[in-house]
Image (cartoon, rainbow, N blue to C red):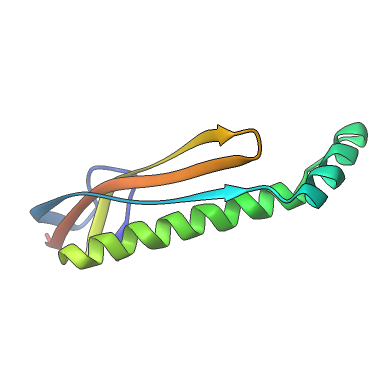
Length: 106
């Protein structure tokens, strides 16, 4: 599966557009990690717990989008975008979406 943020892939041509595909996940922070993060804001620096949480969330949403594309028979997703929204103080949604297509060598 080829995933691209662009509308084209060098050396490939789109032979069929299958439609919009998406994947999402909603994750909540752990209270214990919130306490550690709060302490980290005092001294500064990266909050590794949140970096890991967001990375895992992006990966899961991307995997779900790929599964959605594969179910349609796609071999590529173009114009891939990520979006984040906060649902409540300690939970966020990661959404990834794009256009499922079938590409062939140009």
